[in-house]
Every structure is written in C-alpha cells, then in structure tokens.
Amino acid sequence: MNTILVAGGAGFIGSHTCKALSRAGYLPVTYDDLSRGHAWAVQWGPLEVGQIGDGARLAEVIGRYRPQAVIHFAGFGYVGESMQSPDLYYGNNVIQTGLMLETLRDAGLRHVVFSSSCATYGGVHNRAIDESVEQRPLSTYGFSKLVIERMLNDYGRAFGFRSLALRYFNAAGADPDGELGECHDPGTALHPERVAGRGGP
Image (cartoon, rainbow, N blue to C red):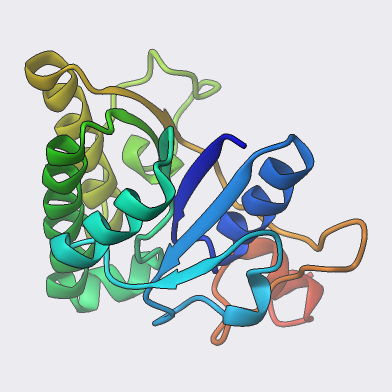
C-alpha cells in the first residue's frame, strides 16, 4: 500500500486529509506532537508522536513506513498569536520546517505538499485573488508561511524537491459522516465564530 506521511495529521485539516487519503487507497501515517492536535482525530492510520524538527525521531518513522510523500500541516495558525508571540511562529513554522526538510533530504524523500495560507497575500485587494497576485503578508503567521514556500522552491532548485503549496482561506465545518469536526479553543476563525453566535450578525 502506498504510504503518505501526514505531519500535523491530528489537526482539523490534517485529520480530514487522512480520511480522504485512506478512502483513496493510501495509508496515512500521522506524525504529530499533539501540542495542538487531538489523538482521537487519528482514525485512518497509525499515529506517531514527535516533532517535525526532531531529526532522529522523524528519520525513524520514515525508515519504518517508507512514505512516498509528505503532506505538511504541522504549523501554528493564528494571526493574532503570531503578532504577540513571533518566536513561536518562527520557531515552529520556520525553523522546525527547515530541520524537517533536512531530514527528508537525508532520507531521499523529496515530494512535499505544504499547507500554506491565503495570509501570504496580505490585506484587502481590489481584485479576485489568484496566483498572479503579489504575496505581501501582513502578519508573522503569513510571513512564516511565505518563508516556507520559498524554502521549498529553493530546495527544489538545489536538491530536486517537488512541492505544492495550498493557499486556502478559512476551512470550516464537520465531516459529512459525523466522524470529525472542529475543536478550536479558543476559536478565532470567521465561520466557527459566527456559527457559535460570537461573530456578530
């Protein structure tokens, strides 16, 4: 069976991705430190606990499962928090990812799908946002995502990595089968806040 390593697979988007991968015939191996994810959300493949920057632990997991690719969801994702605690975002999102890429490089694993963000585009635009819009992030969070995109591009040029960055907007809602849902505490995203009656009319 083809195996995909899902870094951050115990989080909201990561766990939904693991379910979709399983249904498509892949074995999703969740690699998560559970600092913000939930073990109960890992239902469609094994859970391996560890930090992406822990090269020895990550290499052990890669050696055991031999994944064909990595999907990287293991980033902190709150704009306000990133401005108050930039050290967390540069430390976790940027530095830890850099260490992960070196481990992948050593293991010969060079296919990465990266969970980026629309926050790389910055503020309000007077046109629909597509990939031709200049990326000018306004938050530490958005900038950390952009740095990782650049890292992946540079690793592609220098070391043959092939990567794809997903710059989506607010992801919200529950799994249609009722097996997964959101668990944000505190909640900051637009849709969950409005559903809960905290976001105005």
